Length: 180
Length: 191
Ligand SMILES: [Zn+2]
Image (cartoon, rainbow over all chains, first blue to last red; front, side):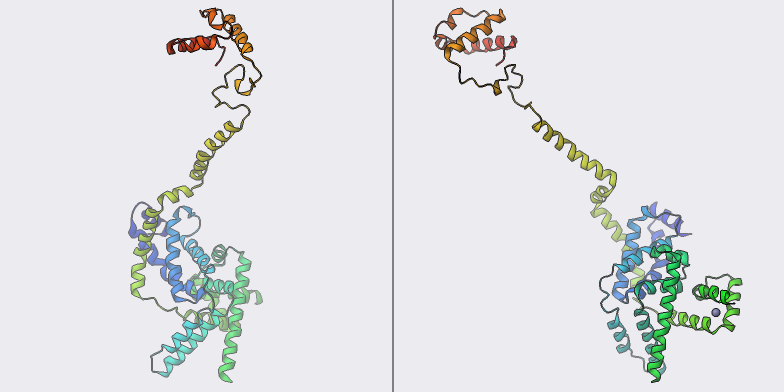
C-alpha cells in the first residue's frame, strides 16, 4: 500500500494505516532531527511533533507532492525553530566518549573517530548541514530538498557543496592535529 | 571530462543512498576508478553515513505511533470548538454575528431624533418645546381651542370656565379621565 492509500485509509477510520506510515518514516525523521539539532531528547520531541502536526493538518496535504517530502518539510521547520542550540550537543559528544565501556582499543579508536565526525558535522552551518543530511542521508533529490527547504535547486547545490567542502576542511584539520 | 566530473559529483549522494539506476551506477563506478576527487568525496559521505544518532531504543519506536495518534485525538476532543472557530468562514460568521447587532444598536441610539422617546410621535414635539412661559389663562384658551376644533368631544363647557377647571378635572372619576384621555388621543391632539 502506498502513502496516499494509507492516508485515505486513516481518514476513513483505520488507525493502523497511520501507525504503518509513522513506522515507515520515524527513524528517518529522528536521524534528520538529530543531525540538525545534535540533541537526542530534542530529536525525539521533534519526531513526535512532526507526526502530530502532520496528522492534525492532513487536510492541508496536497497530494501532488509526496508525503515524505511534506513531513520532512514539517520536521525541518521544527528543527529550525529549535531554541536550545546553545552548544550543538557537544555535551552529548563528551558523554558518548565518557560512557564508553568497551575495553578494546579498536572500539575506542572507532568511537573517537565517530565522535570527531559528529563534532565536525555539528560545526557546519545549519542550512548546509540540512542540505547535506537530506541529500546524502535521506537520499532526496535536489528538487525534493529545494521543496523542503523552500529555496531554489541552485541554492540547494550551493549549500550541499559548501557543506561538503567545510567537512573536508574540518577532517583535514583533525588529521593534522592527530599527526602532530 | 570536466563536465562529466561535475555531473558525477552531483550524483554521489544518490549513489551512496542507492537511488541510482543500474546504468547510472555503472557510469559513476567507472568514473570513480579514475577520479581521486570524487573518491574522496564519496568516502566522506560514507564516513558520515556511518555516524548513527544515539538510538532512543525499541520502547520509544514501538510506542511512538500509538502515542502520536492518541495525542492527536486528545487534542481534537479538547479543542473541537476552538478548531472550528479557527476556520476562516466560521470566524467571519462569528464576527458578523457580534458586530452587526452592535453597530445597529449604536447607530439607532446616535441617529438624529431619539426614536425611543415615548413622546416622539407628539406633533408638538413636546420634549423639545419649552412650556414654562405659559400662564394658566393661556392653557385654558389653548385647551379649549384644541378640544373644540375636534368637534367630537362632548365635554361640558363649564369645566373650562374661569380658573375653576382644576377643581372640575380633579372631580372627574378615573373612568371619566380615561375616556377623556382616549378621546383626546383619537383626535390626534397628542398627550
Ligand atoms: Zn570526478
